[in-house]
Length: 492
Image (cartoon, rainbow, N blue to C red; front, side, top):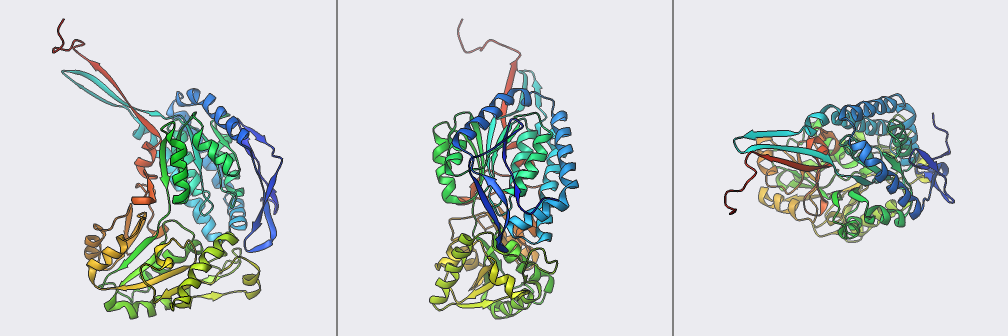
């Protein structure tokens, strides 16, 4: 088990790098308690990490894929063995309840195992032969990958990059978020220990480190999960050397509830509530705005509140009865509260949901009682912006056409969901502009690592998970061996 005040360090070529400055990571449920310390590495450290990855690339990419798979499987087993300690550390530094932390580890392991099971077939060269000759279509590693992961799901959104990149023959430098640096560092260390030195490196730090990771000419690919505004800076930094990019960005995901949705289906209502408030609403793919056909709107709101009051129990994440913990950091609390206050000031009805299990703990930490917000317009900030916290606006619409129009009226398009009779819901889903649309479920409940995940519009570029998530870390290499080396239309 990891100690209460754990100090982690970055590492380059298998060696830990000490920093002059360390930042305190507080426990968001009890901000006076310290969860641990992480370093503030420097731009120079980032350069050394990139150099180490670059120096190791050719050796690693030319190793048999069986060797890479075997090493990754050993790392998977180490993570499984350490799951009890990792989930406690993640819960303490992040604020998510223990069940949620264990669920994140489970998603990470499921993806890593899928990648190991499928990478050999995905990377297998395709050979085409006919009277004109032979053509080999190979999949090569790209080079050095810079990976930058966020704080909301630090383990799964790091391993979603690490596993396919390394299995495909790339080397990597990872930078975690300073808001959740501890558990991801320990997991990354476990993976790196099974790899040759330099294959997987990790640096912590601020904007100067991130800038180096996204502009250094030795970096061939950037894999980033985070905000759309940050991604714009990353694309500019990558432009000078035309880097390969995978960007999984923000989403203001719509849930469209059709007239034939059964509001008396308690399980479906519970899934809806979870899709809004799991991890205190701090998930990019969570349902953040609900549109309900006006014919069932009043009934829906009533049944939704009943379901929410049954499931939502706010408190210390180490309390096994808790379903929702604190928000990860004070800055995010202020952002969400501002959106709620703005709506209330304009006359919206803000309805508190669920139960607070311990008022003293609630007052001490970065907690917010979940709310649903009624009587807002589509253009209001709480609807238009990504809240990334425990609040959800519920708006009526008139008929499928308007519901589709409202769902699509956003700069984002990560995920969405449609709720109703299945075939009707699928018909509507085909017209939603999103990377993923789920039927009668949403968010993590509908996630399947076997299939590609990513956004449209300003929600991202490229796909993660599935075979596409493996291919995203490869370059296509075509080798032509023509039978007739002379071209008939060129004169001698």
